[in-house]
Amino acid sequence: MLQVRQLEVHYGGICAVKGIDLDVAPGEKVALIGANGAGKTSTLKAIARMLPASGEVRLDGDDISQAAPHTLVGRGLALVPEGRGVFARLSVRENLEMGAYVRHDSSAIAADIERVFGMLPRLKERAAQTAGTLSGGEQQMLAIGRALMSRPRLLLLDEPSMGLSPIMVDTVFGVIRDVVREGVTLLLVEQNARLALSVCDRGCVMESGRVTLCAPSAELLDNPAVRAAYLGE
Image 1 (cartoon, one colour):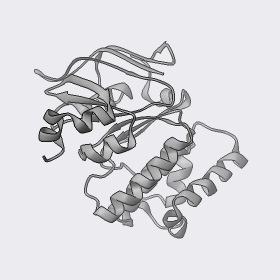
Image 2 (spheres, rainbow, N blue to C red):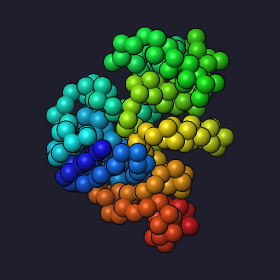
Image 3 (tube, one colour):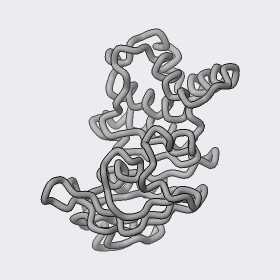
Image 4 (cartoon, rainbow, N blue to C red):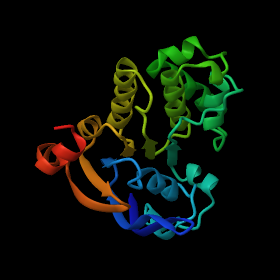
């Protein structure tokens, strides 16, 4: 579904992503793990065309390297950004409606809002509340729910556990597990490497802007170097 070839991202004279290659198959769940500053977020933003980059990115075989970012939503790609990025002055319901801005099937949109509320009942309780007044965990749920409203086939999810309490992390990752069980393809960036690998089929380690290792999650969880560097052992 996703093919990345020789992707590079520069910030002025600094090369943050150094010619990486990455593949994600339909229905696959892949985690990008690594230290802060390794280039994980820049990779997701470049794939979603939120950052200028060189190299080639293909979605379903089509080159999207020069596509306008807003057109990718209609092609089935959705990004849940680091820091959630909710529309703070809009209500929870209005945020969900914004997630469906590329759609015109009003009855199905209404049904999908109820589906999101079924998955995330706390959002239903706060449907009329402005998003900026939600807790961090509730905003993360809303950001995921908003992305689901576009009916994505490929979900890019950036640091969903950041700043959340352990209980809220469990809740958010329970939702992520529910989403991927429905067949959505996932590319996940997550600082909690153990949690990320528990959700994903495969992991790729990024170090200093390069992908240095890709393997099934079970192999990475048993890899002594990975355990020492990223699993706190």
